[in-house]
Amino acid sequence: MGPLISCDDRAVTSSPQPPAEPPYASGQQHGNAPGHGHASGRGPGHGHGHGHGHGHSHGPAAPVSKHLRKVIAAVLIPFATAVLVGLVVLWPGGAPAHERTGVGFDRQTQQAKVVALQEVDCKSVNAAQVPPTGDTSTPSGREAQAAQNGSCKKATVEVGTGPDRGRTFVEVVQPGAPRQLENGQEVVVAYAPDAPRDLQYSVIDVNRKFPLALLAGVFALVVIVVGRMRGLFALIALVLSFGVLTLFILPAILQGSNPLVVAVVGASAIMLMGLYMCHGLNARTSVAVLGTLVSLLLIGLLGTVFIDWAFLTGNTDDNTGLIHGLYPGIDMSGLLLAGVIIGSLGVLDDVTVTQTSAVWELHQADPTMGPRAVYRAAIRIGRDHIASVVNTLVLAYAGAALPLLLLFSIANSSMGAVANSELVAVEIVRTLIGSIGLVASVPVTTALAALVVSADRPGSPAAAPAGSGPVRGGRGRRRKAR
Image (cartoon, helix red, strand yellow):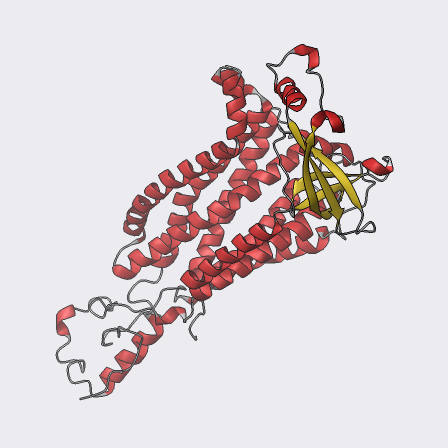
């Protein structure tokens, strides 16, 4: 069997291994080498020992036992086949068409540019307003008062795309507005065809494509420079993941397919492509896939139970309300569960791959360790990983919901009232279910990896036979006989 190629820039079997700790056959002693052809470097014993050691002892990327390979294949091949069948059956023909409502993100937009900007008196452009109910303590009242006493900006905006390319319109920016315009600035404008001609276009956002594209380019460059071929394949896997998300998961849900089924099939496809592309088609990656799959099933089960038990509808903000209004047939609670599964997948991959690699490296350092000893050593590493990953996940969700938490703090709401609101309860359930899946993935993956890696014990048909020389170190180059 030839060397297995991973996402690195060399074959997996070429990783160096210290020559001082060869996997001797059962009953062989380290001190019996002097009369064994190793010292002289001549005779058939020397050639046999080096040839065999090179083929089986460098980089334990796959179990040597053919039986284990068959067992893993018997599990993963039907699973991969089921995922492929699911993709074919559920594959959508594209997002269903609908009549635009002009609300929120469901608006026609074009690219435009600010071509002129001048300061004018707010009263001259009818931007000044009397504060509602005369209360200047409210944000709207303060803005209206500032508009009465300040100067506004009158921006001339030129539409750059669409059928009205070259058309200009005027946008008035009040001094207290959160978004201020600058001359020459690229902006995004909304188009309302049913409005009067002078009001058909309005600025809704700035164009951030260039800084975002530049940042993405810097990210890709850093990943490739540091990760080399492995980093390149990771970027390719990332593109494929977004492809599955945008071409399969989202359109399939919009077409009315069950969000949970779509999420499971899509997440499984992303997992298989990402893990095998970045870590190689070997037993180590296969064990990580199995551990990830078990954890995803646990997350799906817990999510189904607790989302239903907590009466979470998934309709918590304007965006989800708009989705429900446009596509009332979508199961919003199922969409919430699908988000939990997909959101947990990325961190699960990291945990399962790390634990599997830890088990393999521990076994490589001491091939005499049994499955229980390997598990105990690796689970100590896993406990550190659990602490850091769970903390990271909770802080990530808390950071995303920070403005919402500030609003509750301003309102002097109690922690119980905050947690009981559906807007926060959704994030709590999402965080806790994902964390439970992450924690469970550590012992599950570690146990699977320990059983697999320990199955090829010294003295097995695939292990080095008694009388074999020690394993070569370095890059596997044959030393010249002296």
